[in-house]
Length: 391
Image (cartoon, rainbow, N blue to C red; front, side, top):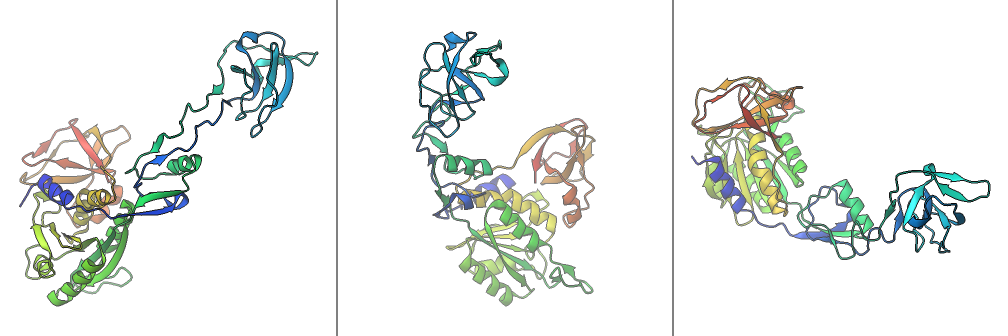
């Protein structure tokens, strides 16, 4: 049995790149950039008005100014204001040459003569200077970034309508066990619905990869080997849940070896998730996760999701924050690291959720995250600061 830190190191060091592809920027949401996005223009591309008002020389503020033209957004100025002259200007329009400030309509007075005068007291320039946001040739988005809606707006601004992204790895998901039936079926005696597969496929999709479900492998070595071998041939990562403990029918590790997988570990000093198995094949990386759904959920988040992100060139880390415990907690054994589901109270405390063990999947929808209890630590005291990992 190895520590979680060692298991994490082994898994992450087994990563390999997925390759890249070029796609439309409009289809790039949640993909990982494989090349920097570089601006082909200055932004703004000209000195731009940030308010509706009057463009003039600062030295003329407070004087009666002749309005010589109106400059609309999308139109270039046709005249250059001289001494005691100004141009009416709209937000987003280019500022006439020689003008170094714009006073707002709200701070102006139109005189009977048709001239205008500044009546305000705050003399902000109200001009966004050419290139003050971005200069031509600047890197505006860096390789390895997960693309968000605001990034797509940046791409549009700098004309990057086709972008290089890392290819999505295909993740094969297999459930194992004679006791399982699919969710649309009514379980018979001694049967349960297969919740792991749909949960893992959803986690795969959330991580940015593509998932493929291979069905339920029955407690038969030949059947399991057939399904596992097919998944390894087609996928970059294969996940099989169940069959990795120490029971008579828990033969997944031996089947993986028969399929050509080199097993790197079969036990981690964690709770839940102790019988987590990991191995490498020349075509794929393979995880054997525990059959209990809380175990498979947490082990995916802690081990598989970081691996998927690294394969796509993204250095993902879960969101964490420090908060005090609402109540004390003591566990019976401290031989393994423990992850416990928690909820954050309205007053900013961390409160443990009622949790009956790794099969208690209905506890997770209430959870805001999990806390980690290190090896050899039995008690967490009330008001003690703990690290919450968002799940």
